[in-house]
Amino acid sequence: MFVILVYDVGVKRVNKVLKKCRAYLHWVQNSVLEGDITESNYIKLKAELSKIINTKEDSVVIYTFRLPRYNSRETLGIKKGGEENIF
Amino acid sequence: MEKTIYIFSSGELKRKGNTLYFETEENRKYIPVEDTGEIMIFGEVDINKKLLEFLSQKEILMHYFNYNGYYMGTFYPREHLNSGYMILKQSEYYMDEKKRLELARQFVIGAGKNIRQVLKYYNNRDCDLEDGLKRIEEIFTSMPEIITINQLMALEGNMREQYYKCFDTITQNQDFVFEERSRRPPRNYMNTLVSFGNTLMYTTVLSEIYKTHLDPRIGFLHATNFRRFSLNLDVAEIFKPIIIDRLIFSLIRKNMVTKKDFDKNTEGIMLKDKAKQVFVQQMDEKLKVTIKHRELGRHVSYRRLIRLELYKLAKHLIDEKKYEPFIANW
View 1 (cartoon, rainbow over the protein chains, first blue to last red):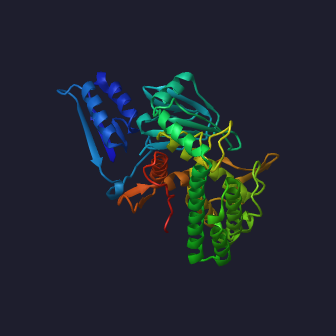
View 2: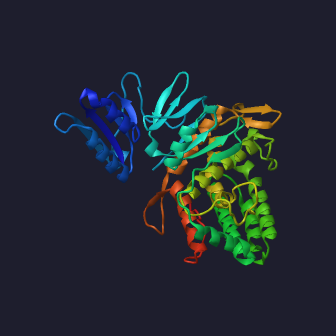
View 3: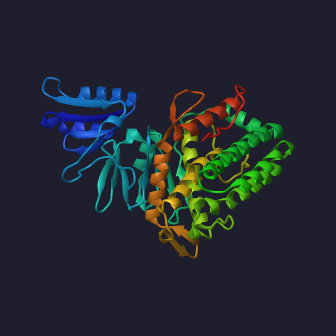
């Protein structure tokens, strides 16, 4: 499935959350990542993130799409990150 | 589905922040390791042992190619699906002449039927391939008389020869005439494309074999020897016509690759980097395309199809179900 993950966490934990997310998803811009993920990796990622964040202060929102067919994606301005597999 | 990473530029690939990181002079990027299945390296890439350890741990294969795009080798991580039983079974089927022939025959039948399917497709569109189809059909009729592997190899060679004769009619492009199959080095544009495509196909199948219990060193149609993997060559035979050849035809017919994309040097004719990138990108997309699988009743990608083929083979080896090759029906 396809997911978009956005986070807003305390400054102490920003790096930890970012690092964890980068192992599963493509970085798009500050606090936003997206990418294809398997069902099992999705559960793994959620579990690992909940260990890092402080549930009283931080917030992570994950949008999931079963198929990317019904959404479109537009960028205004520069492209900061995103998916790439040919370098 | 796990992705393939292709690297053409020069830089350093390393482990960073518990994921993969690729850095060049102008570009730096994290690659999600959990979403990576294999890495194909065409450029000058620096790696270190720490990275290899990480790839091993994450069960990611790394294939590398030389400057000319020839396959050089694979970093094949420690087997994670270690099955002595399967190796014994594979050897048993290899050593028994009759059992080996039966399997090898299936690979040739698969290749032949898929070749026929490709020709039929273009015959129905805008090419007159009746003659070629007829000749292949004729060669096919002698299949039951085959009793040795060598005869089988000869039959396969004949079939391919007839098949390659049809290429010019399909591409309808003077720049890409086939003439005859030439390898190491390929001597014209068409042969260069075929060689490059086949190389990609072999490595893709090898990556899928790694995810099964099968041992890539024991092939059936292609003899097992001291040098190279051979099971991936066998299974690739089935998919070459429907994946690689179709890809080549569409690249040429849509002018995505032209004669400007080639370099002539002493090593024969080589593809330029830009064209290699177009090729792998199209190949990557092709492998992700899903089709309705009749037996399973659900959609599977071409890449998955390769894995299913290996599972069928494994089932044959443990005497559970006779192996029948995948035949495209469109």
